Length: 211
Image (cartoon, rainbow, N blue to C red; front, side):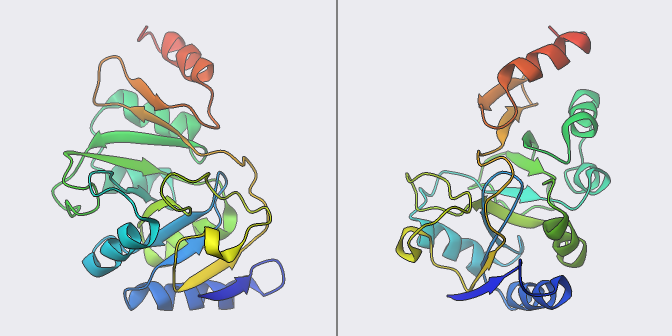
């Protein structure tokens, strides 16, 4: 696995290097605002399979998509729910993953065959620049299955999943995973509480007149 330090190297060459690896079907560990992510292009099925294999990720657990902007997320996810759209505009970019119906254009291999899809816009300028170049990326946290998510603190390389490239930008801002909210349910349900507190979501839903 090749290492690049985003704190020392100019951004443009790193983004070019990462884009090249992804374009040839590779996988890359990248910084986000929450924890580090393991990403690939969502239409490269061999790369999706490598992510599952390198993490030891159970085959039934889906990946999500990270997008460069809220408008892109709404377009790619074909988000029709006014509530999900409002939540995206309120909390993103940031530590929220929205669960919505999976569009037909998204390969079922991304979601482990599930009919739903997780979508997020990370609040990380470098990653947003990368996503503007590559388009949305399939993503999961960059840790071995069952291990603590990697947030950029000191770690042995053996504790990370294998990837073609590792982009090191130091500790992440949140140091916690994103919160996952299922907007296919009524009312929406938080499936995992992360950097966005459950109380914040409850207050927003109440103000929105949902609960």
